[in-house]
Image (cartoon, rainbow over all chains, first blue to last red; front, top):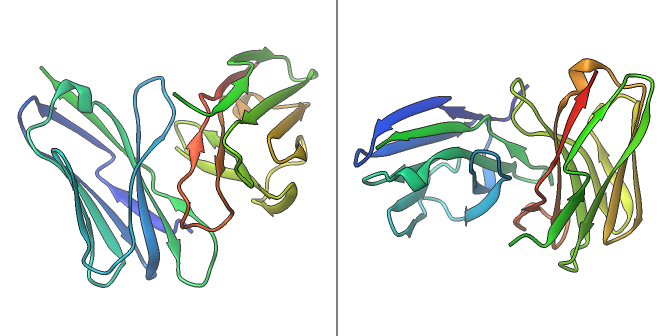
Length: 111
Length: 114
């Protein structure tokens, strides 16, 4: 079965609104990575989280790793049209050197 | 921008054809990957190579045959494909097979099987 679940599948927001996508795993993860894929493009690495409860920021993007290391979130403040794309999380369970990508959240931003 | 290149970018082939997809990475990485991306399964890992040795094969049909002649090049040989194999095929590389390393993706090959 799928190791990493991601919700929502789609999100439509008005420019300036906030956006959040969530990533959940049934097992404890050793790390989690986030990628962005623009329409017609390929996934591009954004960030990696490793520590329990870790929070990292990149300008308007805030990434969190849950205390139990089973979930993560990506929050975008005041979305812009340049944020359009699909955001993927990818996690690797402990003691199992394998990576699982979430199903992605497709973000559309209306100007 | 990308240190991973893929050719061709677009490919249309019949079910009886034989074709190959090529991937080259210029990053000095030791691990390379093939992914299939379709509407049904956004990012489906197919094969993993580490130091030119195949270390993972995720129940991929035998009509897909990977080849890694050296750490910079990766091929995906295709034969007798089915229409449901139409998808975007992405190649990626990482410094090492360990999951702590980020993956760098190529632009992909858009494959259409007729």
